[in-house]
Image (cartoon, rainbow, N blue to C red):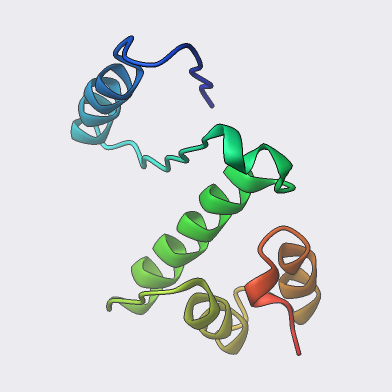
Length: 101
């Protein structure tokens, strides 16, 4: 896990993109989050983006098909017994859209 912060126009995005590109070429899975000052009032915002992306990627890899949102990913992972319903509830505390109705 890497956190990069700093003032505007210092090259943070370019640095992250270059390092992530090299890591991806070496076989690493890259999950990124972007945060602005407006997001500082949203609980778990960066973690929410990363957990959502990880869940979608896991579902796509195991399903062997495209899955385009976290709700579909959570449904698939529960249906295939990769997640238990309690996992879905716990993840729903970070990614509210996947909380069981």
